[in-house]
Image (tube, rainbow, N blue to C red; front, side, top):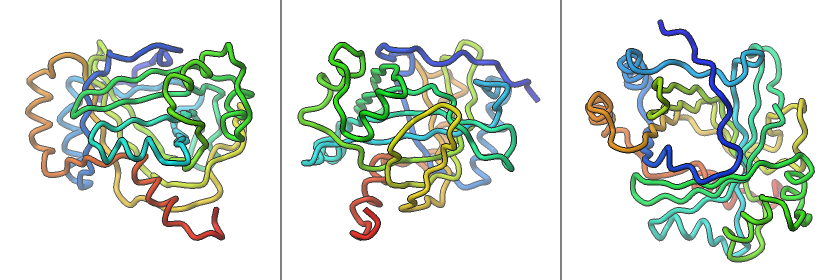
Length: 254
């Protein structure tokens, strides 16, 4: 088995054309295990923090009161505005803790192509976004927010999941598997070394989500393996799933 690759954190703030194609699947357990086994000769597991080798992601999605971003998904060119936070733990008997790395991201998709812009956030800036307080006008996050949002936004729903990541040596192909996916009401703060698991649960998703991302032309080996996954391809997104759960929740949970 290939040894885990020690990965550097993602870029702090820039468009991300290096991952400009993406396809999503909800495969059966057998199909997922077969796909991961077949990719081992080209990819290795990624570890971002050797001290916290089990990785989780907490993603809070924002939208306007008119639900402009949700409307973009229905229009066929989805746009998502999200606060992405990272958490980890030594083993599953210990609660995942926030690492302190967090970004405000704007992601736009068109078919299999996507662009993503991200700005690094401080704990105070993340807290402001989560509570509706103003951001410092000169901050990169405030600039991104002005460019991305057609109207004032608020946090609507949070996705939480355990993430496994695999990548080729040159990082031109990246494969992620999200498990234990759940949706919850958004948190109110973001601080390093705080427990990260959401507490106000809305919905648990039963299936694992496999995402395959690559830049440029896909290599022949990937084209063949993606063909075997086509029966499991999904066009939906975590944002849409989460918003359905939030909008269907009863008044007592909001």
